[in-house]
Image 1 (cartoon, rainbow, N blue to C red):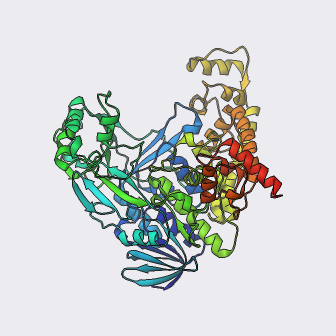
Image 2: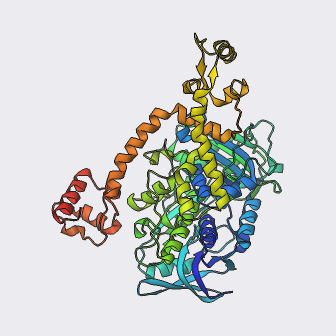
Image 3: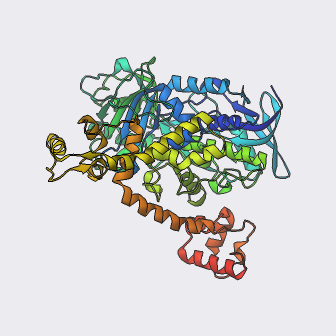
Length: 622
């Protein structure tokens, strides 16, 4: 093992994997430190990637050279496209993965990676000299000198698992928490807080009665995450749906006092949008049932994940309540549900590059910044890895705007919003979501992948060719005429209004009731050139939403004006006349880089922005 590295990544979860992978890909000598090598990229909770809004992040990671989309495709056992009844801005992919295969795939990719070493060890402390990172102190290997470090600690910092009144110091059931590093980070001047999350029980398939449960299989037309893939690689198997009952809820109500959540035992704030079953029963007392999804953990295990039944109740209460649910009357618990409480470090302490403000060349990524979810963590890990390498090279940082990517929205929100609960990505958080679709990540981000050499020349060539095809198709469609009699045959078959004249494919696709799929099925669309299904669907979206997309681009141009007004980082806002005390404190704490970012800080009003602009002009700074 070497003793000197360019970049050391602490933690082998979803953030750590992407950080280590991309930094090694960019040529930096990289070390990944993980407590358990066998658990690299472990799916601690739901064995799935993507979902509403989260799939946007995965697509962006894929185009920027990351691994998550590739791993999801290669280990996927169920592929679903969600929200197809709505507009393309909120379409999303979700892939149920084989849990063990996902972790094994990621480990194999990292182990084969040039410039990357992996060790099983625990980081105990950081060696900091003159406010600059110098080394990482580990339990087994001692001092490891490194030019940069990226802390991707997940839920392991001073972590405690709660099952009823039982408290277990653990970052994941059966794995020890990382207490030393959290303590040392506080000693180094970082402010900390506590958050809570949880996971449901896993039950054996043999104990489930599937016959009356609602079946949810893979889509007929599978759409992979990665642009490199065209199909699923593993056998596809279904998930199942059932519901809790009033009896279930009554058992839970009778045992509220035994829940670690309600007894006051848990101090950290949990995720609002992924509550425990006892929290749902309490908050939504008028509901007589809640949906539960039974999701297989893999092809070679009999464990099922009971999605929707996260809990911190005692095990016996969990069993009693769950066994009142249809199909789960004889459920055998392989692993219990539990809540986990852990330290995080509020993200106003990091820059948009994810480098910390206190210590130069030290980066935080993932749940340490207050986020929840594999996808949010992976996006941060990727960006931290890229920026750590760029800084060591002496190059300008890579910062994505809110108008460019959900990754940009994520990082900007973490810094400017007052995060008091685990942050989760939603499409509603993006002001320009029609332009930030999950299926056009390549058109938005390819220029950066090319600039920073995040993809191979062959991959970049493939994506460029694909984008050229997409932009050629509307013109091709406009030249493809459909005669009246042929058009009427198509309209009659699809129960559409009969036309008085012919049309062209472009104008047909403008109609809400006409789709590429219908045109292909009826063979009314016959192309001489070979275009992929992806290219045809992209062209369809550009045609159907042309007016909306133009208006959104106009909004983005206005948005960019405020982003271009940069704010000096050495300003003391207490010196600004007319600025409220609260605004001064927040501005000095966060140090926004632009007027646009200043306006997004929680508690900063339009009047405050006007005062800032007046003061900047009076000082000749803008």
